[in-house]
Image (cartoon, rainbow, N blue to C red; front, side, top):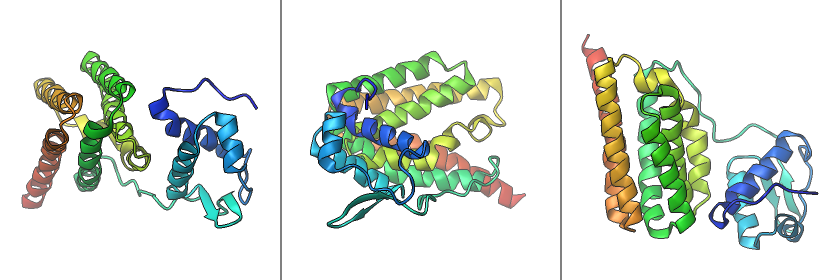
Length: 241
């Protein structure tokens, strides 16, 4: 079977996850089917056993695969993911607050690990997303997408496949929801918001470039903390009315 061109080495685990997920979605591997052996997957994707094991571990975490010791890895009978977020109306600030609090717990640590472990290719991906966000500040939809890609690139740079997997499960749809992120802002307020976002992203990027885990964690905590404070203020104002 011919596989697509491979990505940089730092993203090989993501590459294997994406390719296996495509096969599951296309029903090439059906519920209950046994996956090819670890050795066969290594040969097919031309990657190490470590990459295959990390990819399988991530897909087990997301509920797509299950390991049976001594037998092999199988597609789960129950296709419903255990990591499942009930999406309430997008205009509900309490729901947004809960997601932001989850992101803080996840992304602050991922950012610190990215500063410790990032490769040159990882850093290039973060810079590319940073530049895309800066170019898109007047294009609301493009800016939100680039913002998400910036955070996802950092999670990938942690070189722990569970961070990007959880980030995708937790916040992808939220960060693309323009009503939550930009609703109710005047043009001047929106410009101020985006300017602050650029400044905070730059602080995060600088810390990762300098391989400073402490500064990276602090910069990400400040960045997400601003949004958490904003949603808490919205809830306090609503409760007082």
